[in-house]
Amino acid sequence: MATCEHAVAAGGKTAPQQFEENNLSEAKRVIAVLSGKGGVGKSFVTGSLAVELARRGNKVGILDADITGPSIPKMLGMSGRHASGIGNLLLPEVSMTGIKVMSSNLLLANETDPVLWRGPVIAGAIRQFWSDTSWGPLDYLLVDMPPGTGDVALTVFQSLPVDGIVVVTSPQDLVSMIVAKAVNMADKMNVPILGIIENMSYITCPDCGKKIEVFGPSKLDEVAEGYGVKVLGRLPIDPALALACDAGAIEEALPSDLLPDAIAACEAVEPHEGEGASENA
Image (tube, rainbow, N blue to C red; front, side):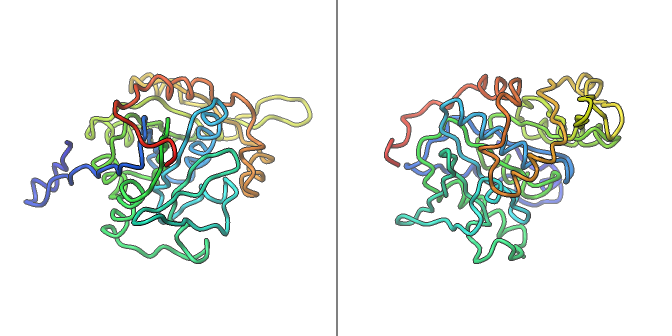
């Protein structure tokens, strides 16, 4: 179990015990999608991976750990919907193609209500989304992380059995810093990085088909090589796809095989051993 060295040095608490999984859930693989800063399309990448994995016949869930800025429900057509419960457990909402989602937006009266919670309350929400939610059997649980490497990220990596991290960047000068933050956190938490996805890598000219690097030449390859991690894909700026996400239609609009290397990296993760949850969960 990882500990927070700064907390220990200050005489504070070490890492919390890992949250328990209830007997109506079994996530075979838990993969976190992380960025060292906001605004790079991390939630879009999470949604895209979920859709691609579901298209291949996998049972997929998304735990939306971006508590104060959740966007997954809207992307998957869940605006206005609310999570329900069975006994003491929450039930995730289910998308058109069967992707299960638990998010703070599914617990609010209105999706535009601000989440004015302090750190301990947010950590409690992460516990609820893991321990008090009936996920049923899942081949993959993707965790959409908040931007940065703060309290919530620390809670997730210390308290959930994360098997790997997908890092999301954009092709700007900050890419090296973003990757460095993610790599350093992964190293401290002893969680492997599966690789890096560059979002907003280019835009395709609608007239001539030329790829235009809006933010300048990508530095992804050299940064990835410098940190010893794999490049899992480059995503274009696609206005039509962005509109589809805003309309809750990513499952219909997402092009096929958009991130084959990233999907292969997820599939290479060894599943957890266990008896499994009930198929009727």
